[in-house]
Length: 204
Ligand code: GRF
Image 1 (tube, rainbow, N blue to C red):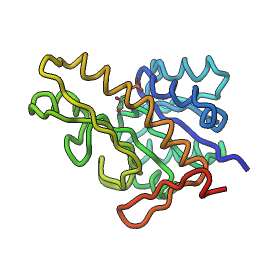
Image 2 (image 1 turned 45 degrees about the horizontal axis):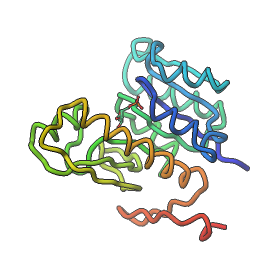
Image 3 (image 1 turned 135 degrees about the vertical axis):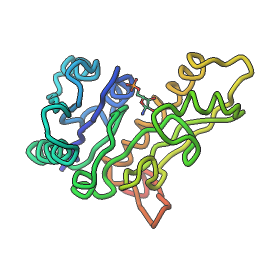
Image 4 (image 1 turned 120 degrees about the vertical axis):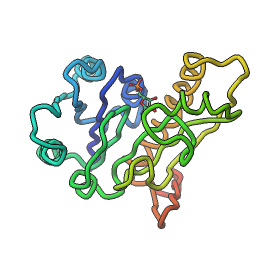
């Protein structure tokens, strides 16, 4: 049976768009969920006829309860795996334990460098010559889990935040769908911190 994927997003959702546009991943997306009712990502999902849901943090007494509500939502929709595509909240242990090694996150830097919410600005301010994008499995430490994919890009002397962000997005829109494709096709083999991405032929 086809794996059912939920995409969680808080913002504009250009990465959700890239997932929906991927010929393999697109058909696996069963739910787009957000913590923000105004997230453009929800619009994009609805535009494709994908079911959407919003669970706002303010409607729950604490983070654990919010997390549990997400777990129950995903459980009720028969979700098998999850892609965090610009989901701006820390995913708690209850949700992570419900989907062991089946949640991937997209991070706009070469982890373990520049974790956190403002990594592109941090990298630019640090003066690094190379930065990049990481897709990793989510574990119980923030921006920490085993790495599925990374791609580097040069920081140019005349880069500002906008120009660097634009190139980071280009890379994201390419490597995130490829990594999520491997996730939904069951091609990720995790050995400790090391993830082997099996090829489609290996898996067949
Ligand atoms: C991406 O840069 C991703 O790396 C970060 O949040 C951003 C989301 O962008 N976690 P978008 O909403 O997909 O355009």
